[in-house]
Amino acid sequence: MEFNKIIAVTGKPGLYEILSQTKTGVIVKSVVDGKRFPITATHNVSLLENIAIYTYDEEVSLARVFKNISDKEDGKEAISHKESAAKLTEYFEEVLPDFDQERVYASNIKKVIQWYNTLAKANFDFSTLVEAEETTAEEA
Image 1 (cartoon, one colour):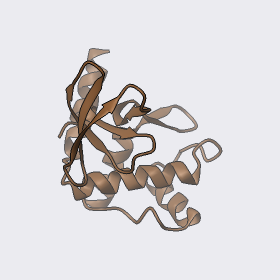
Image 2 (image 1 turned 120 degrees about the horizontal axis):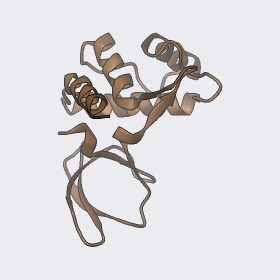
Image 3 (image 1 turned 45 degrees about the horizontal axis):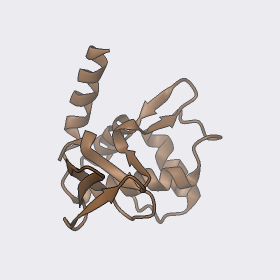
């Protein structure tokens, strides 16, 4: 499973891996249960690779945040996304100390932790995230 092929679809729970393209959209597979189905152009889709978290200095890629959580949790699942907003914020400060608390809401943190845990349950190799990020930085 490659990070640059993982998407979130608005209105559908969980994460999906892009398998192939069609004339009208893409075929995806659920990371959670492996079910395959088409996603058409009418769906709002977000590539996780294109998502970033605001800090006071810059925007940090979601890949970097996932890598930080993975390092903290040794590749295992993080705290539950159902914890209180205060606990989630406190946890996120440990992972990304300088995140912009005015622009990153508890709901954003909840979603990031939920996505991380989904990938961790699917045995995603978070060590590949840094390599991919370094390769992209070298190309720029």
